[in-house]
Amino acid sequence: MIEIVDQHLVLSGKIDFDNAQTVYQDGLRLIQQHQHFPLVVDLSQLQHGSTLALAVLVQWLRKTPNAQGLHFQDVPEKMLKIIQSCHLQDDLTLLHS
Image 1 (cartoon, rainbow, N blue to C red):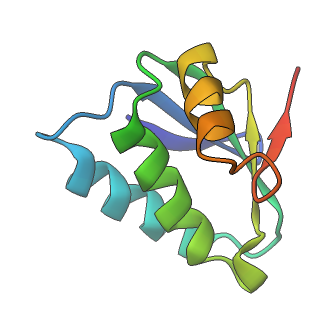
Image 2: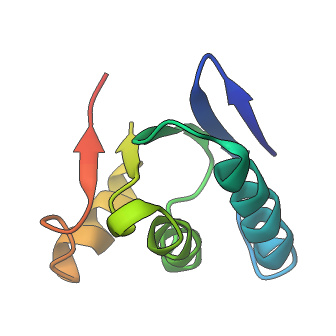
């Protein structure tokens, strides 16, 4: 599930092959409705930090102003390792709460 809570885009549950397209489209619609960037994407309730979930996040990021309009908060450990192994840590703004 994805929703805007306190000016944060909160992603909960899991992203898998069955729902990735829907999560992408729902999130993109919310991002496009948002007018102030950067927008914080809260990942604290995301169940699995998979490569598929990361792909959705990167696609969202590419649709924001200057491809820098999202900051990712509370990235799951597994996803953080994927980010580091792909050398994306300099391309993504990662926040810790």
